[in-house]
Length: 90
Ligand SMILES: [Zn+2]
Image (cartoon, rainbow, N blue to C red; front, top):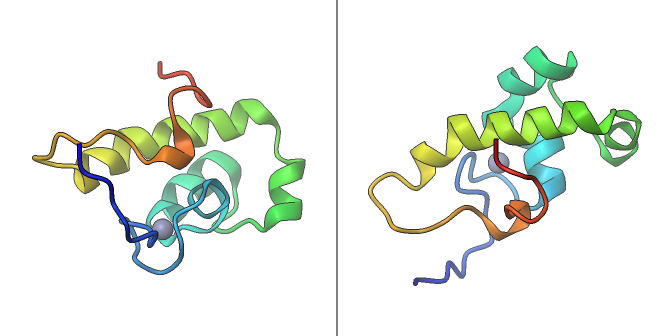
Protein backbone atom coordinates (compact mmCIF):
# COMPACT_ATOMS: atom_id res chain seq x y z
CA UNK A 1 0.00 0.00 0.00
CA UNK A 2 1.44 3.31 -1.07
CA UNK A 3 1.69 6.14 1.41
CA UNK A 4 1.09 9.58 0.01
CA UNK A 5 3.79 11.92 1.26
CA UNK A 6 2.25 15.08 -0.18
CA UNK A 7 -0.19 16.52 2.37
CA UNK A 8 -1.87 18.75 -0.21
CA UNK A 9 -5.60 18.16 -0.67
CA UNK A 10 -6.04 15.92 -3.73
CA UNK A 11 -9.37 17.54 -4.58
CA UNK A 12 -8.46 21.22 -4.84
CA UNK A 13 -4.64 21.22 -4.46
CA UNK A 14 -4.98 24.47 -2.53
CA UNK A 15 -4.29 23.59 1.08
CA UNK A 16 -3.11 20.81 3.33
CA UNK A 17 -5.66 18.03 3.49
CA UNK A 18 -7.14 18.00 6.99
CA UNK A 19 -10.57 17.23 8.35
CA UNK A 20 -11.12 20.95 8.88
CA UNK A 21 -10.06 21.67 5.31
CA UNK A 22 -12.36 19.04 3.83
CA UNK A 23 -15.37 19.94 5.94
CA UNK A 24 -15.00 23.70 6.05
CA UNK A 25 -12.69 25.03 3.38
CA UNK A 26 -12.13 22.72 0.43
CA UNK A 27 -13.29 24.54 -2.71
CA UNK A 28 -14.04 21.23 -4.41
CA UNK A 29 -16.76 20.70 -1.81
CA UNK A 30 -18.18 24.23 -1.77
CA UNK A 31 -21.31 23.37 -3.75
CA UNK A 32 -22.06 20.32 -1.64
CA UNK A 33 -21.39 22.34 1.50
CA UNK A 34 -23.77 25.07 0.37
CA UNK A 35 -26.47 22.55 -0.49
CA UNK A 36 -26.31 20.90 2.92
CA UNK A 37 -25.36 23.77 5.21
CA UNK A 38 -26.11 26.98 3.34
CA UNK A 39 -22.45 28.02 3.56
CA UNK A 40 -19.75 27.86 0.92
CA UNK A 41 -16.97 28.10 3.45
CA UNK A 42 -16.70 27.66 7.20
CA UNK A 43 -13.96 28.57 9.61
CA UNK A 44 -13.23 26.62 12.75
CA UNK A 45 -15.69 28.58 14.91
CA UNK A 46 -18.49 28.12 12.41
CA UNK A 47 -17.77 24.43 12.18
CA UNK A 48 -18.26 24.23 15.93
CA UNK A 49 -21.74 25.69 15.57
CA UNK A 50 -22.89 23.22 12.94
CA UNK A 51 -24.85 20.29 14.29
CA UNK A 52 -23.03 16.99 14.00
CA UNK A 53 -25.71 15.25 11.92
CA UNK A 54 -25.15 17.88 9.24
CA UNK A 55 -21.38 17.47 9.39
CA UNK A 56 -21.82 13.72 9.05
CA UNK A 57 -23.99 14.29 6.00
CA UNK A 58 -21.32 16.52 4.53
CA UNK A 59 -18.62 13.97 5.28
CA UNK A 60 -20.64 11.22 3.63
CA UNK A 61 -21.44 13.41 0.64
CA UNK A 62 -17.79 14.29 0.21
CA UNK A 63 -16.86 10.62 0.17
CA UNK A 64 -19.56 9.79 -2.34
CA UNK A 65 -18.73 12.63 -4.71
CA UNK A 66 -15.01 13.14 -4.36
CA UNK A 67 -13.28 9.93 -3.43
CA UNK A 68 -14.18 8.09 -6.63
CA UNK A 69 -12.58 11.00 -8.51
CA UNK A 70 -9.44 11.21 -6.43
CA UNK A 71 -8.85 7.50 -6.16
CA UNK A 72 -10.15 6.36 -9.51
CA UNK A 73 -8.29 3.33 -10.74
CA UNK A 74 -6.21 3.00 -7.62
CA UNK A 75 -6.33 0.55 -4.78
CA UNK A 76 -5.83 3.28 -2.23
CA UNK A 77 -8.34 3.78 0.52
CA UNK A 78 -9.82 7.02 1.74
CA UNK A 79 -7.75 9.86 3.20
CA UNK A 80 -6.60 9.16 6.73
CA UNK A 81 -8.13 12.35 8.08
CA UNK A 82 -11.62 10.98 7.55
CA UNK A 83 -11.26 7.33 8.33
CA UNK A 84 -14.19 4.98 8.67
CA UNK A 85 -13.51 5.08 12.41
CA UNK A 86 -14.51 8.73 12.51
CA UNK A 87 -17.51 8.62 10.22
CA UNK A 88 -19.44 5.41 9.82
CA UNK A 89 -20.02 4.73 6.17
CA UNK A 90 -23.63 4.41 5.23
ZN1 LIG B 1 -9.38 20.70 -0.84
